[in-house]
Image 1: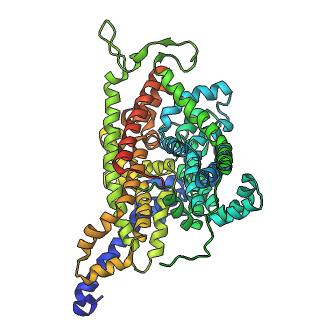
Image 2: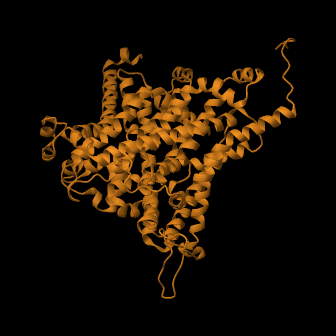
Image 3: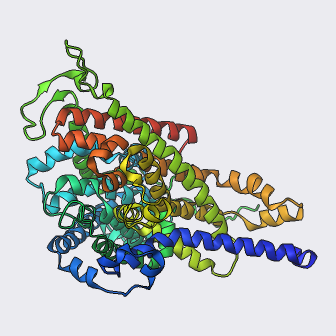
Length: 283
Length: 309
């Protein structure tokens, strides 16, 4: 602080350099996204323009109307929503049972179960791809969203259990003891006493699991052929010929998929950071 | 310290209650354990099982046992059939390791810089913190398409503008660096978020004391901030490097599945398994990737003595 009075020139130079760094960081983080938004609002003919002219070119929503008219994209949005919501709801329900047991009960083998859940959460998805493929085929779930809901549990469940367990541990014990004294069963205690307290944690965990499921690519690409989820539709979005990439439409589709996520993330900013760090292991 | 004579004695826990609680815990855990067994345990066992057979994806029931033949096998004519003898596999391993080491290193450095900037007081701090979340929120496939467009040699800002019409993604040697740039952009903010959370948990009076003692900001960073951040940093490093080792989607979207097989271990395994229907061979590669990643996990866990409580 005393630098301001001692050497004002140096002080203001430092401030200027710092703000320049802030600008560079903001540009780096946002410029690619900004450019994608801009491209989605320009007609395909304008893509050849130089950057300055391109920015000044006319805004049009034709890419968006074309994307929404695309039946693959419509179906993709629906399937993505069904798959992500389905796998997250199942994970939250059975994951909260497990988290309650792991965070509040003492029993033999708890440590081993924690290790197993942690091990599954670092599973490379490819390690189960062939086993899951034969399982899905045998169950007749190939190209069926139910198959994706089932397979997504491999990463949504360990994540949910892990994060919720650390939240459950932080709930004061008196709540549960009061319920036990009143003769409530464990399920009653969980649903009537702990769930209301855990609401923020459930929302946070559910949101992060939803983002993971919404963005998943490898399983979606492998276990479906025509009933694609949105990431696969965007990855394979093609024009009339192989060499004609409709960039405007690809960017429009990308923005449509991303905007809900960005809104969710901005609304739940604080929860997300706490959720990300709660899931981290203490070293 | 005085002992409070009216302090309630601890409730005497009997064996009965303990045993009942333990039984209830098992019931509560059962659905999760069944789900994990179904979608993780059993498929993993099947993958290991198939890795010892020669089988086609379309007819998994007609299989021949060949032991370690998928890993290493030379016919009498000297033809190498095992994937460990395939130079393309080793190329994929080399590229994945390069990708992991370089991108995780850069992400950590950039993430640290951004976190330190956002952690200091200035006008517009909230805006920058919000901007930080944007790349993290964008789906990986979307970010890969965005960058494909930026790299495009006819339309792209970078491909046409900066590089004058070079197709960066056309050969795998230059492509891997282009992919690293995409991954760094996408995940630097995740790193910055975790590091920022760590920074905000550090006591501020410690820095005040250091200021009083006349330690420069530079010394404070190396002597105070970094050592105290070590646990948070290590956790972030573990998660990111495991993610980077199983990378597939960026390669698949930006290079196509054929070239993804030369640049990503997962891409190589998936091409063998799905595109070429080699159930046994693809499973063997998957087992190898699983072993590599699990070995790294075990090294991390033992080196950092990860605790749960």
